[in-house]
Length: 241
Image (cartoon, rainbow, N blue to C red; front, top):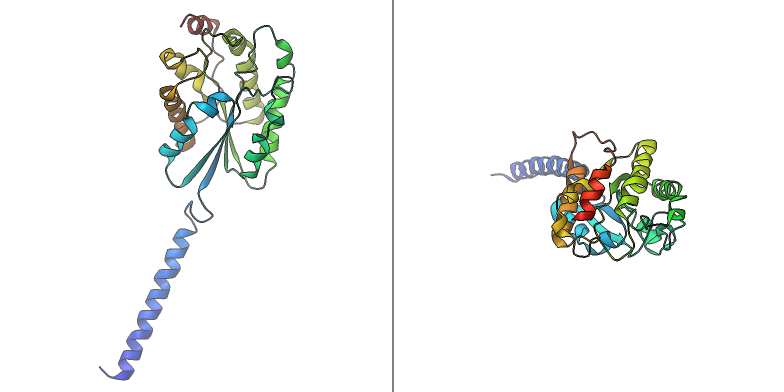
């Protein structure tokens, strides 16, 4: 092969390689890795912090997602609660995480027996929390989660209050702001064996929560709407569990 033909062959190879490289980088620009993994912030109380559901959700979603746990033990949604989430250090940390997806599961600690002042500002506080995340740069997708049922416990938490006052307000927020809601309450009502102290799901319960949220995050066909509030019958069944 003459030198001229070698140069012509090399030139053609270079052109073809450039085309394939351009196609490759165009493909990368359309993947989740173009700007890093999709960031998922798990916002909540001790159930989020300690059940292990964020880590299990990370496993289900895979490496194209980065799931972070921003649960705070004892936190409530209401600004009148003894430990408002909006005033905890995990809240700005969750904001600085710059999440693409925010999962909010609060309300358990707002369901204190005979403590209705916590609920006076519940809905407004919940909406404020959501607005704070919506105000971040980007286009965050926010999921609201109905918390698990409350069984017999020594923590002064009432399933009746959760069912009759907290969850209806959570569902109202979802309606008002047109946000998807994940009904963990109903799922765990059928698995009372996962509660050790009547309030906190164990690792198996964390898996159930993660699976339910995973289905919500990955479904492209499901139309979200707040489920009916659990009935008083559900409340008594859970308390007897």
